[in-house]
Length: 238
Image 1 (cartoon, rainbow, N blue to C red):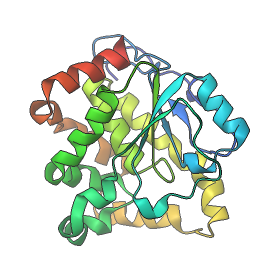
Image 2 (tube, one colour):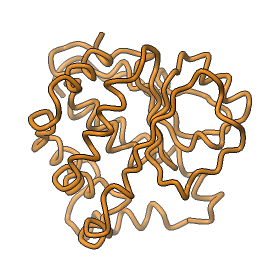
Image 3 (tube, rainbow, N blue to C red):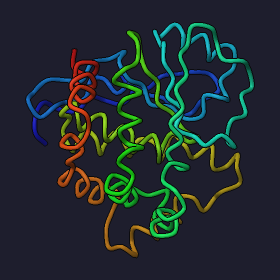
Image 4 (tube, rainbow, N blue to C red):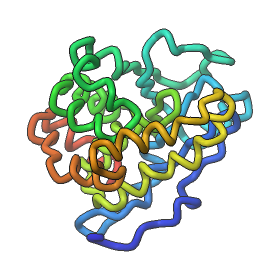
């Protein structure tokens, strides 16, 4: 791995009551030997499940912007959104469009979907990056339903733009699997992980290799607005 050693994920994990898969994207090593900044960007699962205590934790962490990557049919908040939070919606699944789903939908739930999304849904990726780049001062939370697939793509893009090492980005992605096991039990989806493993095995790859392949060809900074790229780097690196 290039750069300094990885940070134990316990230092980045956040306990927000009602959520299972929340962590800061800070403290990750970069290719030039730095680390990403804490309190800048947080990845999370479904914030609609936050209790009042969980919302208080979110506010206390300095969050001022929430970027919701879900489709409108998924919105089911338990409580009204807290005051003082800007909400930006970038529905990545809907923005992909029916043609994308017809061609690549079988890869959904795995990192094999990331490359096709970056190749064919550039405006959606640009909207995501802009939402983070143009957020007001304070922490930004990016979330979807489980905080694994759409949020995983978002985290990969943001961290790659900040120059995080491929090993660090991959390790961060893999943390979601253990965090979400209680959710699959709650949702009565015991085959979730096995199904993902089958898709990857059929493609002759692993999550680690698939992510490294995406990052080896990552070129989004070449077609994203330069100002937004610079703003994301400034937010994550200080």
